[in-house]
Amino acid sequence: MNNMDDGSTTYDKHDLYELCVQSPKDLVLLLRAVHGGDPVTLGEDFSGTAALSHLWIKRDGAKAIAVDFDKEALYKRGEHERITKHQCDVHEIREPCDVLFVGNFSIGYLHTRAELVEYLRHVKSRLNPGGVFICDTYGGETAYTLGGVHRAHPMPGGKLCRYTWEQHEADPTTGMVTNLIHFRVERAGVIEFELEDAFVYQWRLWSIPELRDAMNDAGFSETLVYTKLADALDGDGNAYVLPVDDGQEELEESFIVLVAGKV
Picture 1 (cartoon, rainbow, N blue to C red):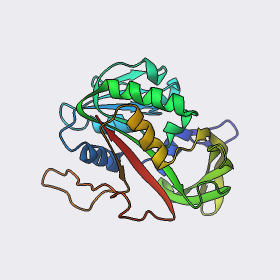
Picture 2 (cartoon, rainbow, N blue to C red):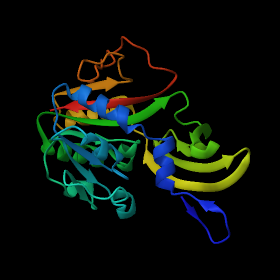
Picture 3 (cartoon, rainbow, N blue to C red):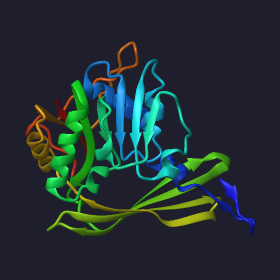
Picture 4 (cartoon, rainbow, N blue to C red):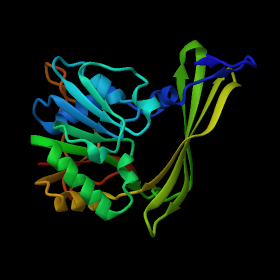
């Protein structure tokens, strides 16, 4: 947060994104649970601020490899001896890992099936034995519906950040969508800061079967779909997860899922 010359307040869009969008603490547990073992090294492609990587290494001995084009976002949290950061194309990285994660629907940056399969083959080449690739996607009856979803997130000092996710364009014949994120910070109904189009995404919205088919073509031995964490935690704080059984469990009318490929 900074004060501008005119006396108004401005906020960093990456800080607001982490407040409103990401839940990296829960995600660390989920990724470990999907792996099913004791993964040491996380690969975080399209990492943004690498918030997930910085939480992943809280466990003793854990390491992470974060990759993103945006230098400002990538180094926002500084550097750490157990996090390797690369400002480059994700295809350039060869360092092995146990779990490789692509979140925030960033798998949609790959617009064609050929690009998707090529990337997944590259991912598979990086995974250690027993490794797993995990990405998220959304779908359901509102997947191509235009409009916005609004949420309010509390902030220090009695402020609220009103977050809007807007599906601005969506073409079900091609799977291409344009999504926007807007932020507004207010206190007692008075707007202190507003940022329209803080993030603009042009994605190919991949369906669950499309992702699973591409993973199969890339050589993954098994694909699984997850919707949520189970309630159970063991004595070490590790979570248990169960995949959605093929055809046995109905997803919600509009859903977000994780699709996993195991080597």
